[in-house]
Image (tube, rainbow, N blue to C red; front, top):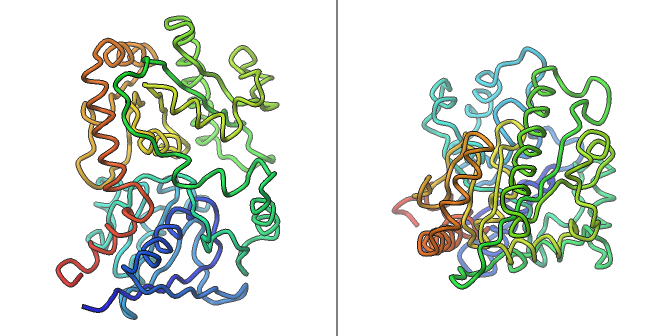
Length: 363
């Protein structure tokens, strides 16, 4: 059979989509697909919602990739997600969603079209088409993309390459524990940006993360490294847990901390999302302790095998002890996450899995 033809119709391409475009470029470099890029003009009639990308497979199958945090983050006031997504599902043959929830999907008119995409994080490769400003990118994003091409920039694309995140399981590693997080200003970036419900969600996330960090510092001492990234909001409201070493939160140093740690902690993101941090832990083959997950991913990825779930900060401590006290269990979880990463998370595998879902026996 001839190679699969894939046409990426690129509108606005923000950071969340970099792993998707990277996956397609890698598959083209590997000779798996024939890749064509269509950059949509600024005023093109086909303008997708934020964090979405259209791909045409073999010239006929319309596919939508949606890497948004949840089901409600793009909704207007009083708009229902069912109405919003039904309009999109009418237009596409397949819909791959990062934040996939079977219960939410059960209310959709064409729920059979929607599939779990998998874990998302900002990862890229040399030559990723997403690095270049797109006609539909806002001016601010175009400027940021130019800055990200500069090697001396702290946002340099080269700091986010696939091998920057990857590691193998280490049985001999000391069971160091890591939780570096950020906090969200409950008022957003400007007055009126955040609804009252989302203010409550941000307050919950902030308080939950802060409590976990304080308890871990008290319980594990020097075995634990963690805190929150410096910001005006963090200093004003959570000064006791701000990471004072500014260099520690730089990308290279953060990833070094991840690789030096055996047990990494994750909590719920905005809109109940599975955050980038979680995917980074899987890429680094870590043992993971996480707040309950609200979304589903492809493959055999579950509590007790790839991560341990906690619902309270106190349970977080208990689950850390479960892993730190059992070297063999901890190592097996690392192996499980190493395998899962290479089968479902690496950009080329994530995209290939979606193509296999679409084509089935034809591929």
